[in-house]
Length: 254
Ligand SMILES: [Zn+2]
Image 1: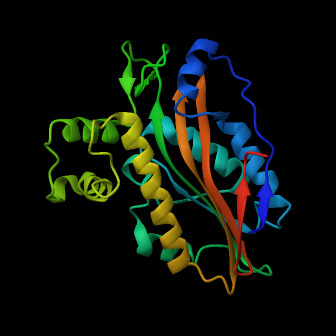
Image 2 (image 1 turned 90 degrees about the horizontal axis):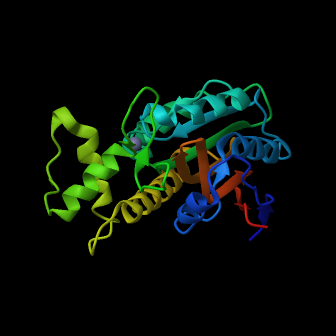
């Protein structure tokens, strides 16, 4: 299989070495969000994607701490279609992606989409797992709140299998994670990685089912958004581009 290689991206922000070493045992190569975005854009530009001819579609968590990612994406690609819900799962589903599939510019040779699909997790100033610093808050807060809640319910064997109409999205989340989440000694890291696995699988299924590769090219970037006290980072995961129906992996590790 052909692989498009993107050079390894190095961190430049100022998190202490001890804290970063702690985090890297779970997420080995966190990249500053803006650097990640610029690299994905420049890579896709070599493949014919541009801010003029491409519609960005984003599946990240609703948490306002994630919003900088949308801002960074929209600076490169223009206004985005929101596909994601709690924890970043693409809950807008086939209907949502189906709608977006009709929104990309069609005055060019092909329609083009770039899709970013990520879950997220915070780390506190001392690398506290799930901790995050929010503006104006005195105490450490949590992220992802939905995944933290689910992890606690898993530990206590109190996960509800019913979906309630006044909490529908969380019901969908627990229903989806039940298929992938760790059951032995669940913890937030394991649940976060399970959420990413679900996102990766679901976005692959959705794009394959919905997007018409006869007339559209698209790129998918999956990963984990990581909130550190000095800003947001991205740990990349499976990424690929489909052009003229041919799929190529995009590698960040060479
Ligand atoms: Zn969240």
